[in-house]
Image (cartoon, rainbow, N blue to C red; front, side, top):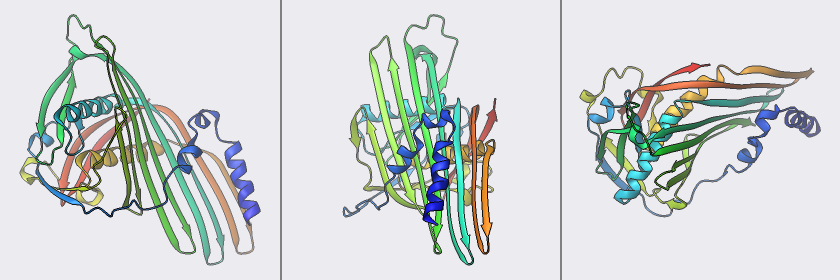
Length: 327
């Protein structure tokens, strides 16, 4: 059995489309941690009140939210870069693949499903065209910033280039009745203001296992930001929200911060919607007696655009609604 499984995996690796090999998905997958982060330090609870402006601006501007308890300059720069990354990734290039392997032998079932999606965008504008529409500091120490683009500037001079890569990985495996689920979302965002000689870079990775926290790692301008000890509880009036029907069911916990909850909600939805456009490129199966082995693969490569339409926070869970178009 192990020889057959190894052979199938070799066929899988050799026949991966060349465009996807450039992303080295196995390197990403192999680096996933398989342990729970040390939590010997006691968590610090924080309470925060969300103003109605959080919901009012969601659909009409790009949102960026800093991590907790940063100095004011770092918080602003981080929220600014994150808002621009959300703006840039509203239009981008998507590529991805999914594989499902199952081995059924009577009542014994072994299966492995893996899905990897990469979203990429390069966006250029000018500092004169970027408008701050709203901003506020929460009592949790998170800085919330809403940006818009105004292309009416007559003499734009300060060029800004934003490069964004978002990688969404999902793995669901089962063996001998034990199920294991891994979710990983990582971002590489950079901003270069050429005429002002300003550069910002962020590398963020979130990993959860079986819907439980594993690790959160953020580097901003090559400095690691420590936020793991803070657990945040938001007081949000339902009067600020619109229709919340169906929101609570698919919420993402906000106790690790608004930005964590927002990007997990948005990009896991986006990944799921993009997967609907994958094409089946391979299906292999073999059966003898009670034993059935199958391998299915799908992949896709296309341009997309999306908009964040709405958000709601109920019982410390944030849910978003998005709209996706394909080219």
